[in-house]
Image (cartoon, rainbow, N blue to C red; front, side, top):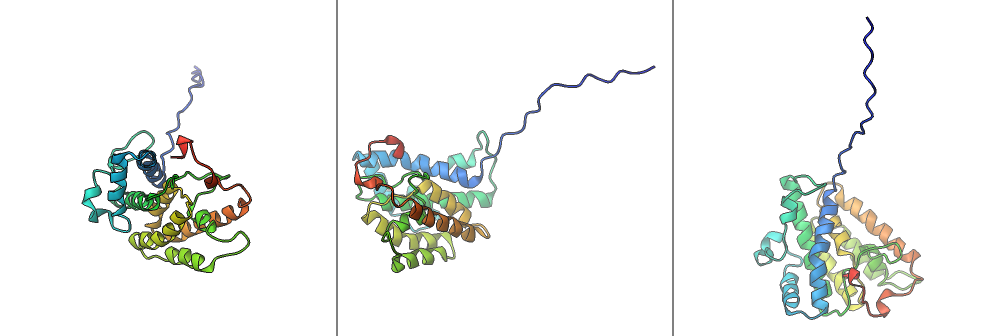
Length: 233
């Protein structure tokens, strides 16, 4: 007796959702922290102004050295897995918290006394990665060697704290010229920096960003007119 074969199944297998990389989670959380503070600071809201004053004091310091910022820099989303995320290991958590602290406090230093947003998300038309921002400090038809050396020196930092300390010098120059950075992007890069081979990978991204700005240098300077788009916050 022949046993008929079972009918072919027409059910569609559901693939698991892609897990968001940790550096992207850090970037998203950095943006979520900065956006309301930046909007509030630009509107001269006392709570935001006071928060930035506290955050600036943490720039260039380890996250654990600034307990007064713990209620400002909230890391709960890193500890509580949500959709498309996974629990982080202890080394991942430590690095993510350090990166978030470094990015947010450095932005607060950058935003100080500025009337335009110093955090602006990167786009191909308006690149705001670190390399692109540094390139904008230089002449259109040349390279400012002292500025370039500051970036190179930052790129050779042995650890994240030293890196942020060296970047403060560059950020001070960017602040003077009202040149913004994508601090969400930088926060993700700070996370990657802390892993083996991370510094080399991040330096390559800065190099690409530097040359990307050079290609788009002919576009109008977005900082020459007031900004009213809240999405830029």
